Image 1 (cartoon, rainbow, N blue to C red):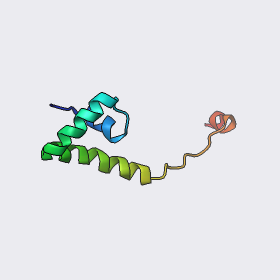
Image 2: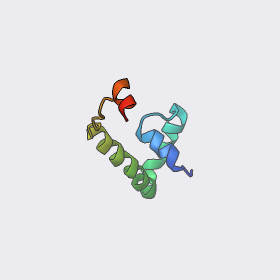
Image 3: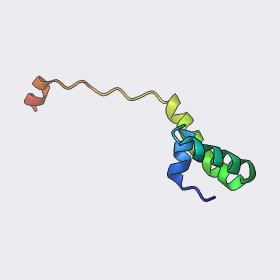
Length: 67
């Protein structure tokens, strides 16, 4: 079966419906190219999880009026 990037990203994030996820899991067992494509999304997801969100400055109403 042919999977688009969005489907692989949803699988990596655990957001794919059960039926499609089970089929993809089976296809991954026999398709090294599919495994490599999925790896891009799993590695990216892991990196994003480890990244702390940047702190954004609090901008109040007073400072907005001053600008």
